[in-house]
Length: 352
Ligand SMILES: [Zn+2]
Image (cartoon, rainbow, N blue to C red):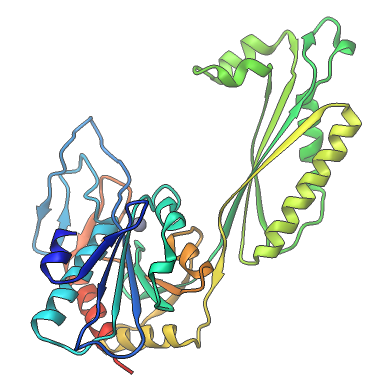
């Protein structure tokens, strides 16, 4: 924030602590452009080291192998600041800039979800936040829905099973039925785990397969949990599959005479960008002007771009300068970092 203020930008924080800065003024022309990076990092440390040691080599920036360096996403923040400094210093004509630095992207875009989008007027945004070879552009990223299905039966001693309702068997039947249910072809459903046991088992902190087998063997389980994840590129199909999961679980609960609770947590909506859209064409032009042949990438995970796109701001994610993110082997390719700052410079000074 201090650096942005020193450069003369109007800097604000929203209620959640996301930082937003505006660069307008006499050299600004054309449609506003939003650039976004996230300020947080994952917390990867080996051997309890609490300090990040940064080694700047000839070609790469690395840590000492005990921590991440946090270049995801600080490489992008640095490149944006460098570009801003250059356009101010050289008084270059540029698009009005709306810079957003979010919090808690790594916690599945919590900061972006809470960002005050009414602060922005731009309809196009670029985010550099991808551990891939330089020149890639994310064309699509899936929605992600977590569905937790919990059957609640009736516990009793295993010697009189007729007095209980086995919720684990209900959960197993649910999995069998759900697996046989026809769902939309676009939906990637992962039935990730199933756990059954006594009801107070979820409050125990030392759960292991051994402890479950010991504590539960003599009890008809009163609880059966199934954890499911859905991903795909058609939001409606994901929502439809959630309804099917609810229907199947209800059917099983009725058959067994037990309760069922379905918790749905939609972490992100999907997006698919238009390859011939203005933003994509501009990005490809800039990469080509840098002598890099760009290519598309269909992402398997989400980012702040899922939130921005679904808030009506067309947002493309491009490669960053970091590799091996979220690992102690993380590094920055210095040449790519220089190219990234140059990318931003070319993009923002392309005034239509
Ligand atoms: Zn990131």
